[in-house]
Structure formats: C-alpha cells, structure tokens
Image 1 (cartoon, helix red, strand yellow):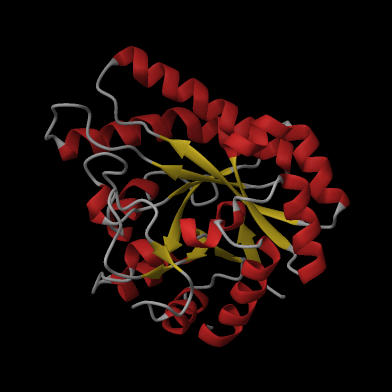
Image 2 (cartoon, rainbow, N blue to C red):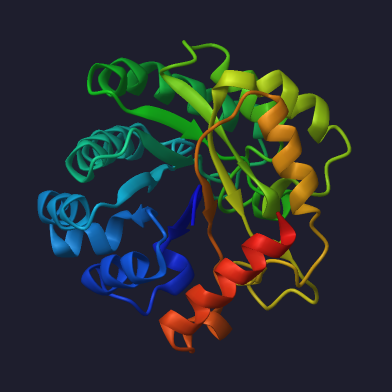
Length: 270
C-alpha cells in the first residue's frame, strides 16, 4: 500500500516480529514505532528486524515532556531525549515525535511552560541534527494541555519550531488533534517544509473516561481526511501517511483483520 505507514500502537497486540510479518503480508511498507516496545526488544535489534523485512521506520514516538519547573527533572528529561534520539538512529528513522509536556503540578503558567520547551529544543536540536534526526513537535488537542501537552495548535508548534532550522525542528500534522481548528489550512501552508509527519485517526464521541484511548477508526467520525491530505500535499509534503489509533476495541481484535480494515478505510477516506 503506497504511502501508508502503520503506527505500532494501532495494533499494539502485535509484537515487533508480528508487526514486521503482518505489514509485509499486507504490503504495507512503513511502520511507526514507540520507545517502550523498542527498548524491550533492543533498538539495534529492532532496526535490523525491520530493515531485513524491507520496512521503513517512519517515526519514533516519543520524546518530549520538557515543561517541569524543577531543574533536576528538566535535566533528566534532556538526558532521556538524547537517548530517544540515539534510539531513533538505531531503528533507522529520521523523525522523533515530541509530546511536549503539560503544566507542572500546581502551575497555571502556560507561557512559562512553552518557553521551557523552547529552552529544551535549543539544547537538543544540535545533538539531533548531528545524528540526522529531526525533532517533530506534535500539537495535541487542547483537552490534553493540563497534563500532557501545552502545545495545542499547529500555530503554537510553529512558533516554537521556527526558532530553529527547518531540518532540525519540524512539526506533526495529526488529524485527531487538529481537525477542529478553523485556522488549520493557513497553518499547514505556513508549515510547508517543516511538516515532518502526517498522522491519521478519527474523532468520535462520546469520548471515553480519561480521553486518551478514544481515537476512532478512519471513517467512523468527524474528520475530513481527504481535505487534510490535499492541504499537506499542497504545502509540499511528500512523506508517509501514518495511521495512529489508540483504541482498546481495535486491540482486542485479530491484528491482521484490523490491518485489512485500515487498508480498506485508507483507500476509501483518502
């Protein structure tokens, strides 16, 4: 399936070898990875496994969580992000997705939290650039601002990214997080060459308790995927389209069945 990448969290019931085997069988040539299973398998071993299967690793998720006010916590976050950059190199991807972090406990200072993200990027961008890895800031829906990501819009992500060279710091366009924003067309055009990843999931309601695991299968909700694809292509994006859905209903099913459904929906909605 040309251009389609499967993020491994979409079918998290698969091990890495199962992911490789399943994608090859379905003729899906791209995969997005997450650090925890990669660390468990071994980054170098994971890279060999996927290269030997003829698969391209389109992204590694996630770095970030830069917003702590405590100096020791910020230092630890920088060290962890350097490890994440090294893991990206090991698995063979040039995109490290960043979830920037929420407000520290008891804080209401969104501006200060966002400036700490900029400070962390200034520390990490040279390290990443030397290793051929691009830091990709992912804006998350505003419902995550308090505890997970104070970067809520593509405009905010670009305000941070544009302080750095485009080949060092880019942005992620994720339909689940950005579909609601009436400025999104202008911001995608503004992003241009900074678009480092394009991710798909649908918005369905009601959201589950905790909201994290409420992403919908393509075509089940409110997102106009074809419109989003047209916008990113018009902005010059020629990379992979990565399906990233956190949904316990999908995780409870047979992985090959889920992937077959994703391919069918991908063809239909795009």
